[in-house]
Image 1 (cartoon, rainbow, N blue to C red):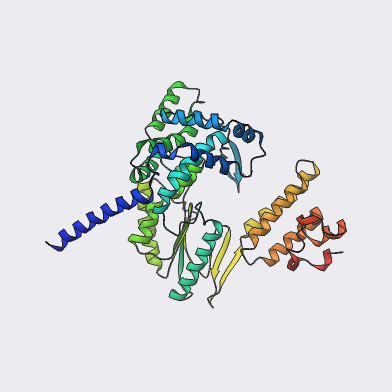
Image 2: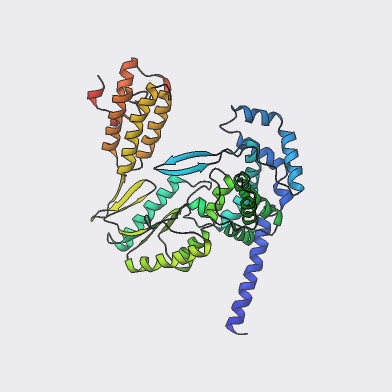
Length: 430
């Protein structure tokens, strides 16, 4: 037996062992009837009610949960996806960009929660690289920032302070994900066609609701044919299934960079990613290879945000600017655009409060959110100036010493005076 024949048999044996392992470890995740059983819906209801149990629609659904769940399961077992109970879309403008968010009602969210928690997440999570830091348990924004900082520290030890970063961003990420690519990913990981069909049906259902409103019958039929044949693009913002597919679709790119190219210092958070290397030409060549992989997936890079920068100059990742000094110190600062945007918000909030269109508690929640974000960077002076403006506009409502003095003492547990002791100044504590 030649070495090639031995290698071929070893590969076949490893594949057989992998199939057995998957069947044992992920038993039930590839079985449609096992996934949508009643107990899974009961567990999903408990999770879906968290934080929203005060809503009337949630209370009504909970009172009739047994009937509602039984009707949905009966419909799914017959191969029919229940119609969406709400197709209302909310338009948001984030930093000048228009985004459409689809609020998911509890009736629609239940089936998505069951499908994700008991099938998609446990089965697809194993295919993700460790440095894919979004939306999974024990991961998130803090995890991604810690991993990025760790990669930078390791890169400094290996390369010194003279190295480069390739930052990339996908253009119109959610709107550009092809349905055919999603279908290919599901076929690679599932044998039960009903799970694949249910996942794709939920993804298509939101676009169907838009297509049905097209007045021209011929155009409506043409768009529906494109959608049914999986030639369309785009998944809705707000759906849990969309979050999972957005993680998995670029997975081929992650493994190409990490496994095939052997790049150690690589991190991706949804549509943002960064790679470190001391070889600028390597990063330049790697970019074009990554572009070719993305073309296969149907994704495109945002040319304005995809670039190679020297670490002494720095780069922005998840609203924080990172750079390395000549002594090897990592400097993290808040982006100027984010600071300016928050200051403008506070001034606008003052007008809204005066017109009774906004409450002071809403303003308090907003400033608390920004202050929590600012702690990840070296932003003492930025926070100090922001609180100074907040003092001028809102008398330091529930945050600074000025409010404590006006109220004649602490206002219960909501007063944040003790949390921001190092940010106060005596001039505003009169």
